[in-house]
Image (tube, rainbow, N blue to C red; front, top):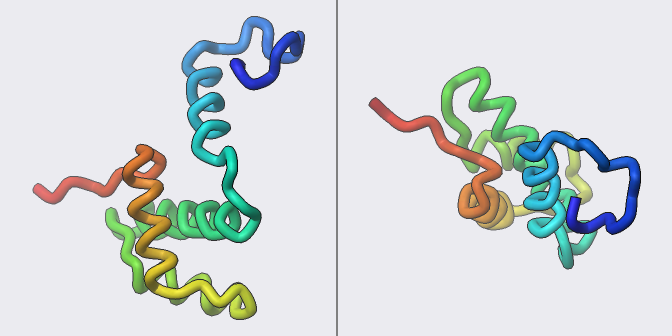
Length: 98
């Protein structure tokens, strides 16, 4: 893992997992707590919906976030932006329509 120099904990780490962890560290670096909460929550609900229906939608995810985290005040635009950010960085991949 590039971001933990000299750590013996990562010796012999599988290269594909090491690469994935490096990508996650780079993606989250510099993000504030609110943005990380949004990204993690959107990713969770998008994956959950995609597992059930082969798609994820802004409306579904926003509804879940509003229901479970009403004080967070995430808007549909926040969810839309987070989805785009996750897709742009290959952390969410929409199911291709046939």
